[in-house]
Structures are given as structure tokens and as C-alpha cells.
Image (cartoon, rainbow, N blue to C red; front, top):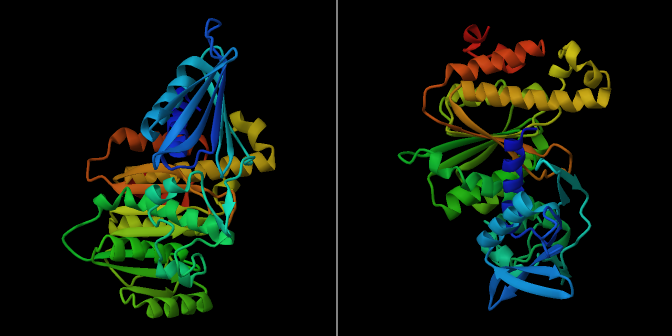
Length: 401
């Protein structure tokens, strides 16, 4: 991973943990300069006059100095300390522990492990520290009753999150944050059409409708598609009970879906193997403004990859499997860029608690595609001797061969 990539990932990790209220505590240690008197800095969230602040406690000899910073300032200060002054940092969040190690040349390594710090539990509801911050940052704040969350057993009628469902509550909010960031890319002159391929039990489909139709008051219709008839029947009943007449569910296969000729947003979560590619191809064909995709199992390219220089990696099955998954998503991202999209790879907390926690978010740019983008893809494809399903089923296939 390049230094630029590490810096970007580090920035996202620190700002995400602090500005989203996930940081439980942090410790910065091992100063780079021998003249630095402060050997260790501890960071924790505190409430001061009802406002969230992050307290930096600096230990110099027997003294402890305190500084309280607003979230944005705290994120900038913690990044500065890690990037310039110290060799080691440990961030603890409810999701995981994040260790940052910097060598003498300034190169950083980021390691993740299982979480060792827990937020406080109160009255059957798992509350973050401090709870004030959750109310400020979550798209669906606790304390405000949300009918669909109550119906799905995530919330009580009073708006309290059920402790056993707090992970789902947090994951739904994370998804809505990602959607909120790209709402401005959607058309504003007509009713929006959104398709959720492989919607399953539809926690996120209902959340999406609530965000766009109820909170944002946008004209929208959403179609949830899945192969399981019993699941679709349950989702349809709940939509009727909520009175959401512009949200409907249907039984069907991604590749065969042809009920509409214009879609503004495509969502696809955990469509297995090339089913994700089929959904992305549908989105490109519709020239959808926004694409949100969480891939699932990825087997196609694992059977194809051949490169003698990578033999030490490819000879181990588990390494080849992981490498193939990364290659598959890199191919998808590059082909989306070739098709006129700006693509981001984001960390997404999966609803099913599997390692598949990467979300591809793409927005249609409307700008001409650089020929270099296509050349980069071709070199990558040919180096690994692969023939991806997605490319083979694109209109642009003749240009990429």
C-alpha cells in the first residue's frame, strides 16, 4: 500500500472515529524526537456544558496537562500527532481496536484487531460515550420513534434502541450516512426510481425509503427485488402496514429484471459472485446517477488468475481467495470509472457480521473518461490473465479488447 493510500486511510479512520462519535479512547506514545518531554497522550470523549469535547491528557514526568477540543479540532490534532510527532497510536472503538505504527522513515502501518473497550450499558439500551453525541450524529437518532424500526424490532415505541439490536441500528445509520453524502447527485426535476437488488429482509430498503421519502420529502419510488417469495411477502405486508405506497417488493432475478427503463439509484447488497456484476451492469445500462454495492462471495476470477510472478502468493488457497476478492472489486471499480463514474471504496459494517465489509459507492460524473483509465484497466487485466464477467457483458467490450 502506498504512502498516499496509508495517509488517506489514516485520515478516514481518525476523522471517522472522532466525528462519528465512535472513539472510546485513544493513546499516543513513543515520541519521534528524544527532546519531546511528553511521553504519552491519552484522548477520551467528555461532556462540557452539554457539548461533546475530546480531552487530550498529556503526561510529562509527574505532570498531567489537559486540553479540551471540539470534534473537528480533535481529529486534526490527533492526526498531527500521529503523522509528525509520535511512532505509535491505539484507537479503541466499539467496532475494533486500531493500532498505528510508524517506523523511523515515517512509513505507517495500520493494524486492526477485535475491540477491547465496551460502551456503557444502561437500561437495556447500549449507549455510546457520551450518549449526547449519538443524538447529534446519527441520521436516525435514538429517542425519536421510527415506525419501521419499531416494526422490525430494532426500537421500542418510545424510540429506545433494543440492546440486542444495537448493531443493526448502528449499521442502518452507517448506510444512511453513505446515502446522505450522495443525495445531491440525484435528479431534482422528477420522481426518483431506486432498485434494491437482493433486498432480503429489507432493513436497508425500508431505511432508504424513510430517509428519502419521509425525512427528505423527495418524490421517490423504490423497488426491492429478491428470489425468496416468503421474504418478499413479509416485506410487502410491512410496507402496506406503514402506508408506504411508493415502496414495493417483487420476486425476481437480477439479470432478468426489465420492469423499468430508467433507474436513478441501484443498491445491491451481498449478491453472490457475478450477480453483483449483473447488478452493476444494469446500473451502467440505466446510467444510474448513484450505485451502492456491497459484494459477497467472489469465485469467478479466483479460477482464472495466472501470473508466475505472484506464485508465492497464489500457491496458498486462502491468500489466493483474498487476493482474488480484491482483484474482483478493483476490476469493478475500474470498469465503473471507464463507464463514466467516480468510485469510492468505503468500509461498511455488514448486517450479517461477515468479513464482506466493503462498499462500492459510485456516482455518475458526466465528465469525459480519460483514455489512461482504460489503458490502466487493460494492463491490469492482461497482467493477471483474467476475463471478467462484467467486461465481457459491457457494450464497451469491443473497446477494451
